[in-house]
Image (tube, rainbow, N blue to C red; front, top):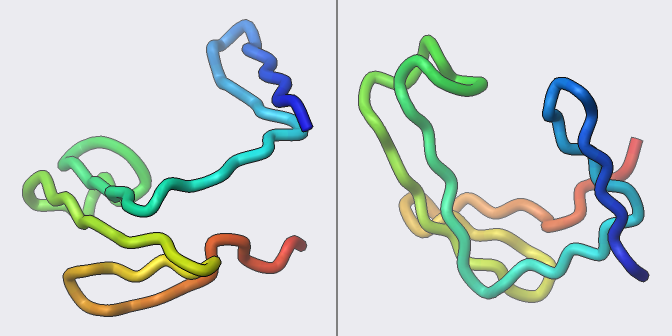
Length: 72
């Protein structure tokens, strides 16, 4: 399935019909004064995670969760 991307006037990107296939490794980052954890991050932090068999595993603490959580 092909991906279609629409960019609105305020530059938000909305993806429709995206066929996303994650690679074997990824990273999550937080920065002070930016993003969803704006008031929680005291310094920049990066966490590396592995993606295998439909599960994401955080290397730092072993927490796992599915790559495709239940749709609402």
